Image 1 (tube, rainbow, N blue to C red):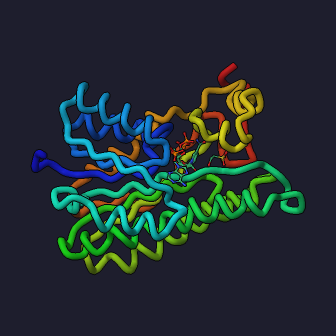
Image 2 (cartoon, rainbow, N blue to C red):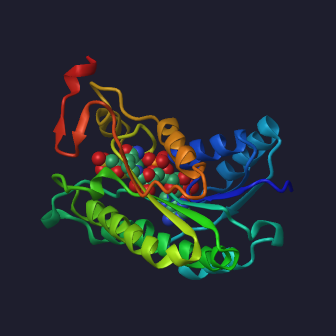
Length: 257
Ligand code: NDP
Ligand code: 8X3
């Protein structure tokens, strides 16, 4: 394994996580990639090694499972314990329903993944960063965390929690030289909507009709920029949207038609 920097990206099997993996691997970073779909992780590892010759380690686990997550991260191979950048990206929206019609099982999945998963992963990695007096945690929040929209309720709440948690982590970790960045993207064309609509391809496609959404690479570029600022510079809070989206409730899709 080379002595270049190491990034850990949760949720690398699709969307932002996958694009972030490619971007950092292309720039010669060692990449530690996680997700639940083992076949996808295996393919990704193969692809990145072939294309960029970088060191890749993949770990298959569910961030909702606290014990499993803690164990896997505790057992990291020695060479992989020095994480320079942690990107807490694994997350989802499950369902789009009014609060009164919401499914508590969907609520659990979102809170257990978007918030509790992020807590478990960060709590496992932070002690290594503290020991080295250096590190950078990049949390993938959402524009949904900046303001609620119709039927977004619990997803928005989970991402608002990521936003305020990023602020708290930034304060607590500052004495240890650790940077914390919250990235809040608007609508991006990934598997996000397919997951939100429980596999309904037509409903998912409709979300991106009539305008050009963000692409996963747009968010990966933002993350790479944030991660590569000089030591004395921190990008604390980044909101990035497609041109057509001023905020979660105000759109001007005609602009791109
Ligand atoms: P994708 O569905 O394409 O990717 C989600 C990734 O998260 C997958 O790799 C998935 O891997 C992983 N993941 C989901 N649940 C778990 C879990 N329990 N344990 C481990 N990994 C998990 O969506 P995006 O790339 O769009 O989403 C990435 C992040 O960005 C999410 O946090 C999302 O909320 C946020 N976001 C998305 C926006 C969008 O419009 N697309 C906008 C703003 C924020 P696997 O299924 O293999 O476990
Ligand atoms: C995903 C973007 O606007 O669908 O977080 O909530 S949005």
